[in-house]
Every structure is written in C-alpha cells, then in structure tokens.
Length: 151
Ligand code: RB5
Image (tube, rainbow, N blue to C red; front, side):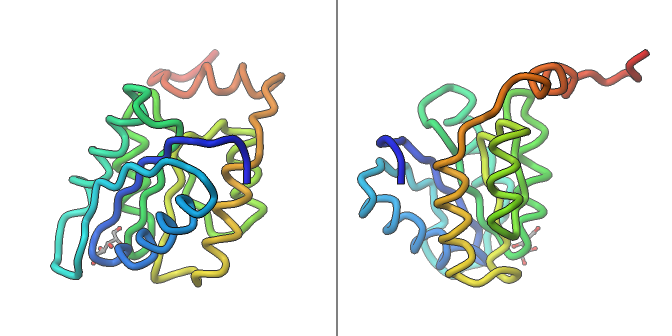
C-alpha cells in the first residue's frame, strides 16, 4: 500500500462492520491501527467516535483518521469542525485520490450504507497511497479556516 502508517479508526453502529474490515486490511498491510470503537451493534452517537479520531490526528498520534457511519455525513460534519482536520467524504476512488492530492485530507469519511465493501477497500488504497500535490493548493488550504469573506 505505502510506508507503514498509524491510522486512527472510529465508527458508529452503522459503520462498525466496515470499520473492522478496514482495520484488518490495514494490519495485514503492515500498518498500525488505533481503534477507537465502537465495537458492536448497539446504537451509539457518531460524534463521540469522530472526536476521538480527530483528537488523535490533531495531536499527531496518528497519521490519518478513518471514520465510518451509515452515510459518512455525520462523521464528516463533526470532523471538519476541527481547524487542523481536512475530512473528505468519499464515495469512489477518484474522489479518494483527489481529496488527498488537492485537499491534503487527513481524515477519510465513509458511508457504510452507501458504498460496498470492495469500493471501500479500493478507496482506502487510493487515499493512503496518494500524495498531496502542494503548489497552488497550498494557497487554498491556507484560506480554509477564514470565517470572513476573502477580498
Ligand atoms: C445512524 O443511524 C446514522 O444516523 C449515522 O450512522 C450516520 O449516517 C449519520 O450521519
């Protein structure tokens, strides 16, 4: 896949099965996994798991985060409230590649009820193996946390 990475994982009940599959694949690929749960089918609140993963990435305890819920939407909304998190909600390999290349995404959000497992695994590979392009994108990323219109 790529050099050995530390990947923080989190999911709610809608995403736990896919999260566990991704964890197994990452470990098989020689990566280190920090699994913040959830661990079973009981109904839980997705922000609790997004917060744990985003704290790990923000504090550089993990290289990347992966968040899985039913749609990926709640996870991505939560993650993108963190100033140093750039979370891409991704449904295919092309957006997985481009959110790394153009957005330097450090968190990947997936909707387990939206995409199939094979697509998710292809997304994982593309996300982790694509480098950020830099260049003109640096200027854009520098504007992400502005809360006033740019002149
Ligand atoms: C849980 O039912 C569902 O709302 C959650 O997994 C996610 O899709 C939220 O965005």
